[in-house]
Image: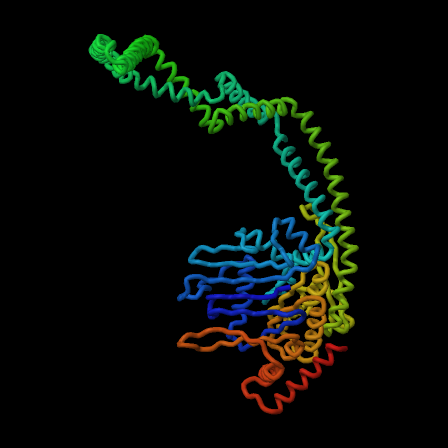
Length: 557
């Protein structure tokens, strides 16, 4: 259940807090008062797109925060599986802060991704935005609604179909890639053999390129290296060594007079030994690192060969060698193409049979679930003043398999006696689509374990007795769920358990949108506005009182 909505610095809203209650919460207000801002803010917190210039220009940041109370054990377990802990008392807070081009989403104070927010939101709230009923005009959406209704069994079967379809597709692609004539086969074999030989004959070793690069740098600078080592050797042997040796002899001549002098003589002797060792190392280095032009050319050729192979077959020697192994496997397949293709055809046949069986199981389950869903929707449509309605779901088999099976399914309807049933997109008007969507939402709400439903102007295109029946249906849904409904119809507003008024005002030279919870007297006046429009007379107020009384009686019944 959505306990609280907090909005700060969004569009015309300076700061707004809405405390929602159980059952049916109604939001009304004049056109342009800011009702859409409330819905857009909720969508924003649930991971939706940020409308252009949505944050107030004079504000440093914008913030939307939703506080939920989660009481359903299945939902709580699902949230814990998503690593959403810290659910003491079932409280969960979703927030989204927007600063400039940056935005941060948090769940119970922990930063999360938009993807995770959307996944969490799908467990907590179902929002019927304006014009969503138009989605019923797209046939592909019908089977999605059916799968959502029967998800417990259907999802398992869909996963099986998806896995088999992936295997089936990969085998078909492999078979296609190995179906060729003899000339094409020979060309591919020649190319593969050339590449295999090029890699094999190179006798590459791991990390060889790094060692070659180091040697190349060293040999490229061999002249400078030799000169520097030679000079250092000469400096030490021509003067430094002799000077240090003299120093040692001088100190030893007086060391008997002071122990400290003896220690200093030992130190200088160590220096002399180190210089002697250096001279030996330098001489040995010069002897062993005497490179010829031939050595350098051989090294350069090898490095060019390695880099050439890396440019053709992989960024590293490891990738080149892996490509070579792949070539070997492909070469063997191609050499034994007929056998390999025969094996692929057998695998494809078996996989296709398994896929056909899995698709049939999925289709049978969908048809079984559809019978129940269709009957429930039909009953709900009767409650919504479709008195002579006929409703069903058609199943057709696609010629090709898909990752979701082979069903092409869509809803059909007849709203008048004697008319044949036709697809929704051929016969349903805007008002009828709104009621059909409401009927579907009422059926889906129970199986989804979603506690909160938001209807944004579900009343499009309806009036009169139909509006009253829609109002009663929304109230009925509100008995088992929290419903938040934005409406222009007094019949629906009269059914409210809690009624909120959204208004646009000018304060301190600034236009702001505010919301207030109406008491009984204010609620009657708002109903009167919805009934009477600009001029509210005593007669209109009496009509509003009567409508509220009738709604109260309808709730009891």
